[in-house]
Length: 114
Length: 114
Image (cartoon, each protein chain N blue to C red):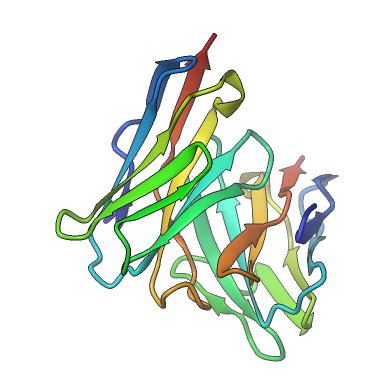
């Protein structure tokens, strides 16, 4: 079964609004989670590293004020896309290191901004 | 500058034959490598990994080979099955499989024909 769960799997929002995506580790604690973004037919691009109890580390070119990351507990990280714009429409995926030295990914969240 | 490269965007193989997916990397600091299988609009599914201290790891139909001197790794699937048809991503990490993030290649789309 899934070891990392992501919700929602699909969301449609209006331009200018904010949308939150949750990433939960199941049956294990994750001090670090990662958020990726994938455009159609492209690779997964790391957006930020989410650290429990501290600020996220953002990759170059990723706007931290637009993509708010909160890792308030050892099993939950959230990504909030603020003032969403159609160009933010993408597939967002979270991941976390789990037992066995393997990164497991969530199911992904497809965001469409209209 | 891509640190992980999958130069073949697609590969077509007959059912029952061997599929060989290749991956090259440039960063000599990478010491942990993983292969993921991905369907559209889903999160990647972990397949197999290998540490840089090894040159081969096998799990059922999947075998990963690592050639550190050439900075090259490959995933062998034998025998290939139609259900293996998906996009395969090679990923690399620094830190021996601990808390580092993953750098992904662009993926290779495998089609296994009955």
